[in-house]
Image 1 (cartoon, rainbow, N blue to C red):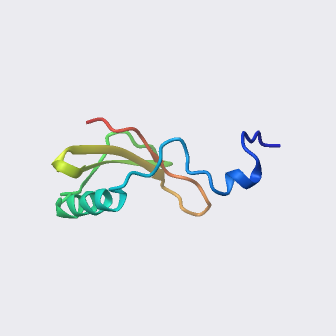
Image 2: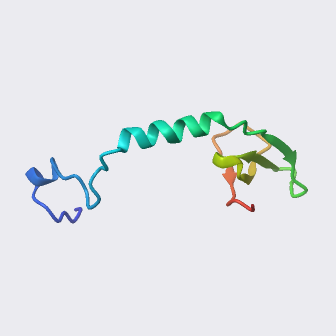
Length: 92
Protein backbone atom coordinates (compact mmCIF):
# COMPACT_ATOMS: atom_id res chain seq x y z
CA UNK A 1 0.00 0.00 0.00
CA UNK A 2 1.51 3.37 -0.94
CA UNK A 3 2.19 6.00 1.67
CA UNK A 4 0.28 9.20 0.85
CA UNK A 5 0.92 12.45 2.72
CA UNK A 6 -2.27 14.23 1.69
CA UNK A 7 -5.90 13.21 1.60
CA UNK A 8 -7.11 12.04 -1.80
CA UNK A 9 -9.19 15.18 -2.44
CA UNK A 10 -6.16 17.42 -1.86
CA UNK A 11 -3.99 15.26 -4.12
CA UNK A 12 -6.38 15.91 -7.02
CA UNK A 13 -5.41 19.61 -6.92
CA UNK A 14 -1.83 19.36 -5.66
CA UNK A 15 0.59 21.45 -7.75
CA UNK A 16 3.84 20.19 -6.24
CA UNK A 17 6.46 21.95 -4.15
CA UNK A 18 7.64 24.14 -6.98
CA UNK A 19 4.74 25.99 -8.57
CA UNK A 20 4.63 26.31 -12.33
CA UNK A 21 6.51 29.48 -13.34
CA UNK A 22 4.59 32.26 -15.06
CA UNK A 23 6.82 32.00 -18.13
CA UNK A 24 6.44 28.20 -18.45
CA UNK A 25 5.14 28.22 -22.04
CA UNK A 26 7.59 30.92 -23.15
CA UNK A 27 10.49 28.95 -21.65
CA UNK A 28 9.55 25.80 -23.57
CA UNK A 29 8.99 27.76 -26.77
CA UNK A 30 12.54 29.14 -26.47
CA UNK A 31 14.04 25.78 -25.50
CA UNK A 32 12.41 23.93 -28.39
CA UNK A 33 13.40 26.63 -30.90
CA UNK A 34 16.99 26.43 -29.65
CA UNK A 35 16.98 22.64 -29.97
CA UNK A 36 15.56 22.74 -33.51
CA UNK A 37 18.23 25.25 -34.58
CA UNK A 38 21.06 22.81 -33.81
CA UNK A 39 22.32 20.48 -36.52
CA UNK A 40 23.11 17.43 -34.33
CA UNK A 41 25.70 16.04 -36.80
CA UNK A 42 25.03 12.46 -35.68
CA UNK A 43 27.87 9.98 -36.10
CA UNK A 44 27.63 6.25 -35.28
CA UNK A 45 30.96 4.42 -35.03
CA UNK A 46 31.47 0.71 -34.28
CA UNK A 47 32.92 0.30 -30.79
CA UNK A 48 35.98 -1.91 -30.32
CA UNK A 49 34.12 -3.80 -27.58
CA UNK A 50 31.79 -6.31 -29.19
CA UNK A 51 31.15 -10.01 -28.80
CA UNK A 52 29.43 -12.56 -31.04
CA UNK A 53 26.25 -11.97 -28.99
CA UNK A 54 26.45 -8.18 -28.61
CA UNK A 55 27.33 -5.37 -31.00
CA UNK A 56 28.36 -1.99 -29.60
CA UNK A 57 28.53 1.44 -31.18
CA UNK A 58 29.61 4.90 -30.11
CA UNK A 59 27.02 7.55 -30.89
CA UNK A 60 28.25 11.14 -31.14
CA UNK A 61 26.05 14.19 -31.60
CA UNK A 62 25.66 17.85 -30.66
CA UNK A 63 23.11 18.97 -28.11
CA UNK A 64 21.73 22.41 -27.33
CA UNK A 65 24.28 25.20 -27.62
CA UNK A 66 26.26 22.77 -29.79
CA UNK A 67 27.73 20.93 -26.81
CA UNK A 68 29.15 17.53 -27.76
CA UNK A 69 27.52 14.44 -26.33
CA UNK A 70 28.23 10.74 -26.69
CA UNK A 71 26.73 7.40 -25.75
CA UNK A 72 27.80 3.82 -26.10
CA UNK A 73 24.93 1.73 -27.39
CA UNK A 74 24.93 -2.06 -27.21
CA UNK A 75 22.32 -4.45 -28.52
CA UNK A 76 22.03 -8.18 -29.07
CA UNK A 77 23.17 -9.44 -32.46
CA UNK A 78 20.29 -11.92 -32.51
CA UNK A 79 16.87 -10.30 -32.62
CA UNK A 80 14.92 -13.55 -32.45
CA UNK A 81 13.65 -12.81 -28.96
CA UNK A 82 12.73 -9.82 -26.87
CA UNK A 83 16.02 -8.60 -25.43
CA UNK A 84 16.72 -5.04 -24.33
CA UNK A 85 19.54 -2.94 -25.65
CA UNK A 86 21.85 -0.95 -23.40
CA UNK A 87 22.97 2.66 -23.42
CA UNK A 88 25.83 3.80 -21.20
CA UNK A 89 26.38 7.16 -19.57
CA UNK A 90 27.88 10.05 -21.52
CA UNK A 91 31.65 10.16 -21.84
CA UNK A 92 32.00 13.78 -23.02
